[in-house]
Image 1 (cartoon, one colour):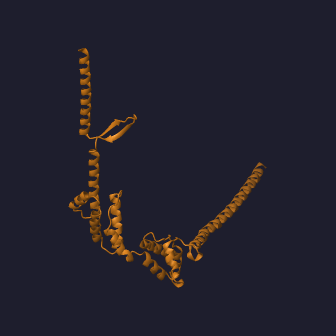
Image 2 (cartoon, one colour):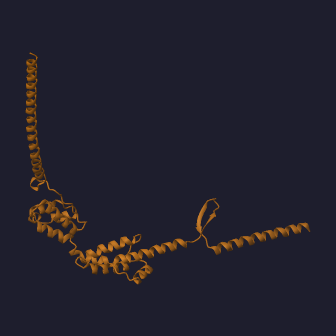
Length: 284
């Protein structure tokens, strides 16, 4: 009797545990299937995002990757063209695209060149490039830069490094196709000639520098030494009291100061002698 009751109770507990495990397995399979679909959706989503992003940066959608800089005729035309070609290559522009973006990047005098061109040349990239090259290119202005280089002299309050940098820049503009060795000798000689101090010019030339940087270093040493000597042997300054009881600073020669003191002493001595004579006369 007791055994049969225990058996029935054991069978009921076992059947309940089996049902619980089956329910748990069904829930787990549902979760795994949902996670698989979610993972699959996530794997597809970046590809869709990349396509949208690529469309957003494509020039055909009107949004270039990199915009060209503005050119107003003041900066170097060769440097600007080099940068513009790189931007055009990044954006994969063709001839009409280059002409359109180049025309919209012009300002000031460069924009005047665009307005003087015929309508068909404004949208033709080689024609627009040739017109701007003729106006702002260094090849047509080499003679002007050579004249400025020959007449270059150190200005007042201009530092030696500033002078050397400007001479180097003008030499590149005046001789754009010259080898580096020729430019080194040219800039070195022109830097020495541009020094407005005869003594410094002579001493730098006697040092026989081989490059512009070497000549600049020698000139800086000479200038530093000259400034140190001037500060060491400055004129003597003394302070005198004016009748208005205010102190003013002036330069005084030591010999003049000694003569002045001797004159004052003699005046006081004469005054004392006359007073002594008056006393003697009164006593007699």
